[in-house]
Image (cartoon, rainbow, N blue to C red; front, side, top):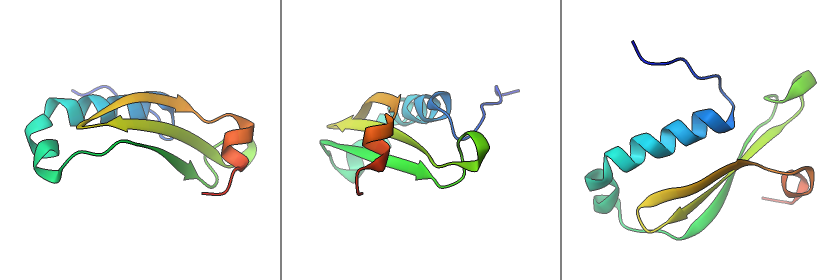
Length: 77
């Protein structure tokens, strides 16, 4: 049985990145991208506050996943 991972969390986005890497052929068909994306769950943090993750993509892989700092989370999307 697959491991249960809480959403939203860095672990959840890391697992998603791992699954994407394992299906690299599918990602290659979509084309490459170099960017950093902020995903925000409006009530995913402590006390129902917003929670954000930053995911950095290079070519066909998600190469970095981390929780956004307070400053980064407050920047306009």
